[in-house]
Length: 426
Image (cartoon, rainbow, N blue to C red; front, side):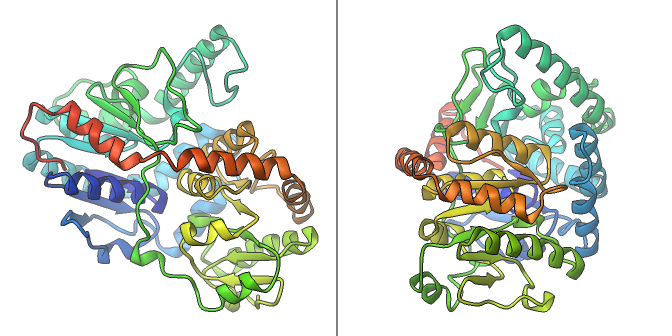
């Protein structure tokens, strides 16, 4: 198995790797983390072999440059190209070398849908490849498109997907084609259907509550559900003082930008000022997550508690609502906790998750990080807090998600797909 990205791109693969290992497979997971070296110390409860390659990709200063640059770009394709140029280009060859080593030792390869180095290496080695999609927005359909949902007709969706795939190929196709030429493979015709989707098995690792399979999806695409894992040691425990803060008043709002929270003092101070002012203007008690709030001049009081990190699965259920960046993992963690959201998106993928939460009736209109103000964020927050219907809908969705077991479903689908083979998964 191989993945690349931030915590939200790695945690699902750790969960699936543990599940496959517990089911009797020998699993080797290779991780490339963009923004943290913490995975060097991660160990497996079930004996998964974990290797870390070229991590972190970026220094803290480079991370801030990427974040500031990305959320200032309006065109989603330009935004994607910029992120990949800064975060993937420097480590693409190292990931490709690791992918080829995995293919030499394994019978089945499983990769993050952006992991074209592994898909290319697997095809060249004649090994079956499983793609894991962390967002259903990447699956073309005449019944849906991320920009319209199901509101438009088939013709409009078909045209939009043609345009989307044309632009995606223009932006991304040179990545797999460069590696394929090194192995004597022909260029791909379409990145979405030949790289992101696998004809062997594509796992849509999204809750069935938010993702429904469409009748024109390829048979190899299966919705397995959210791939979650028990709390990792690196995520920490409940911080001291949190229990007292929770007991001292009304349920607070949790506020986090996840891996998109700036690390540099200037950027982090600006983000903290935005969240702090919004919380005070909305008149709600809040927990604000930031790595260095005290160093940026922010001190906790009876209404606002600043924490460096906390396990979301333990804290979210105690909150009234969650303000977050709209990452796939955070979004579904909030859903599982049964809480409404206020999404402040940095990039187009996060805007998609914000629109999906709004469609489900558990969030208002998402904001954009590049131009949101504290008064505007406070206004969105007040509307969510004043909506008992939204809270009830979020609780209903959480009840439905309790019956979903994404890792078990994914393991069963992989096992079924390769039941007639004595496989080693990597």
